[in-house]
Image (cartoon, rainbow, N blue to C red):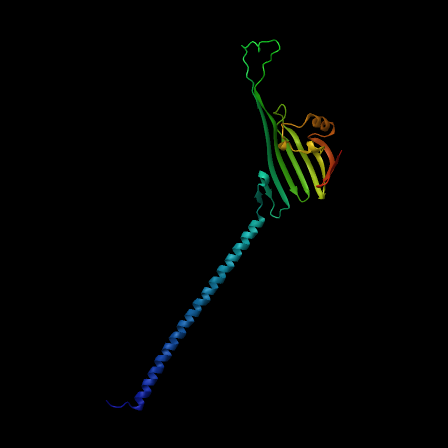
Length: 229
């Protein structure tokens, strides 16, 4: 075979250089496309992060502007987003039912002193509690559908309280003044159906339920004091 001439060697080298330049240009083009795709992906990722952050902020803002509904001690309570105001509803129902077994044909029922006893029921207490709070102010409104006899709606509580001077609570309106330990116990916590007779006698002098009063009470773990007019 004839020996390659210098001119043919230069042409071969130039062809290799051209091929390498073409490959390099192709690599540059592919790298540019890859960089463009990477930038687009980074832009999309940042946009997704911004959207997620905005969605979280919107969710927090919505949650902060939505009233809270809770059930402390089973009582439905609606609280403002900043917890500065609340409205609670409660219910107390105490129903008495009684029945007597008697036969008019029995001789002891026909006796002169015998009486025919009635069978029936009575709503002892049917109270709906509405309690609104704003800061240190509390308003209570409680109608009572019970009593003896029942069927007549009465006002058990309708008052305004201020507790800004701890531990003092000032009250004005219709309510049951705090009077004696037994009288201060809620009727929902009685061991028996009613208070002792001596407590009823003592409190009916100047206390009991639905009194139009103004006064205050103060209490800690060591003492309890109250005064009402």
